Length: 66
Image (cartoon, rainbow, N blue to C red; front, side, top):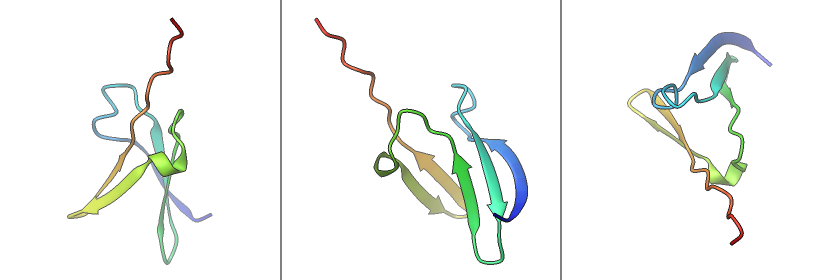
């Protein structure tokens, strides 16, 4: 895949016990592998701003039958 740059926790998710992030670098790209249980790829937003990467999404609790 590429050279591993290590494993970090996402700011904000750390307090909630969020998932680790594996980061890899190639000559052309930076690859982040994040475990986000309960989310589909289309439910995840990835943004960059001033050198920061923000990964966000919202998990909705399942409906409880009444």
